[in-house]
Image (cartoon, rainbow, N blue to C red; front, side, top):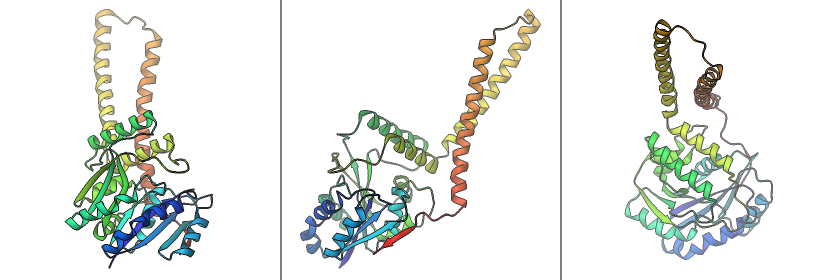
Length: 309
């Protein structure tokens, strides 16, 4: 009998814990027919509500339910990594607790694993119910990433993904502290089947991803899987050096030919502000890469466990 590990990162999802359990095990007939055992791993990311208590209730009813609770909030990336580490299954699937990742897709996903695919990933073809501004910037992010990075990230890609043990072990081999799972999935490669589905709105509760958090997360992805910003900073430096040289020549020629009339100070101030802004921008890019390197060399644990069963 094969074992399927279902990893569910949770942060303040007390309203969805039981609903997710019920929806997942509507596939019980399928699991029995395919002789698939299931372990359900709830990864509590330092929730402040009753998420842990709700998981414990489920555990008292079904021993297939397990919990890994963090000592504080370490973020979804840490929760995903922890789940992959603890998963014992021959197959592993990542899903959100809010039911935006429909468990009803599992039979179809498994059929492609039987065909020989190493992983089956999902992507949304619509963003119905999502703010227009957020949708626009999300699409721009995917376009930018695929232009500046060698790692392909599919537009609308979700973390909802069914993987073989080989793929999971490859992901776990990447022990970096600053994690961007969507990029890691693309970097490890393997034969992947993409399934498309329309956006499903969360059943209960509110999203934990604000626009600002998504913006910071996108920066994490760009820095983790592209060095293009460093190249841009270098090119901007070279460009301004060239412009400075040209202006020196222009000033010398103008002075020799027409004397040195006093120029207006507003244009001088604007030039100083522009150049200073570019310098600070380039220093900011370097600072981001340096800060990520700093966090990596400290070798801090990605997460700390408070409770596990």
